[in-house]
Length: 224
Image (cartoon, one colour):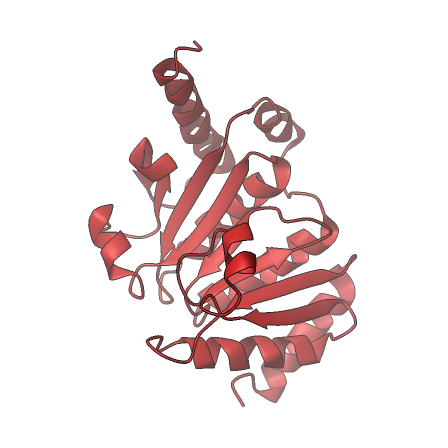
């Protein structure tokens, strides 16, 4: 048992108070060549047992379920999609253990509410984005500041149909961490390196980086 009785009790309390609408967890996993897939599968199954009415789990293999993997643009395992009545573009890539378990739980809660936990001003500004943007947040399971950055990115994805939030475990995805020169976490990479910053920034600062990337993208496309 990965989740002890005390943790299950805490989860039951959180879910009973916070969950509003049903949430679907789609786990893309495989038995071969993935050390953390089996544990991720067990963890999600135990989580769903706490609130089976509101949280559903479906497990896919990218090798077998290629069409579904393509739809969700899944390239790595394990990848967890947190989905409501639509796909908000929220992905967790890796095993959400340690402090990152909080990120998973908060992601489920916010998707269940179908609305972001952001200021009205931030939501208004995010609504002006009309081109695809990807916010990649590199995290580790022992980083105290990482959940805050990851949850902010998830909320941005909830606020805009054009934003995807990819929470990436840096230690499990060393090739990506090396590619984007991740030395400290959380490191946030917007649109594959168009804009990058490090640290859990306040909402306003985070928004500033996203808008900076958006404007840079428009200039590069000759739209500014």
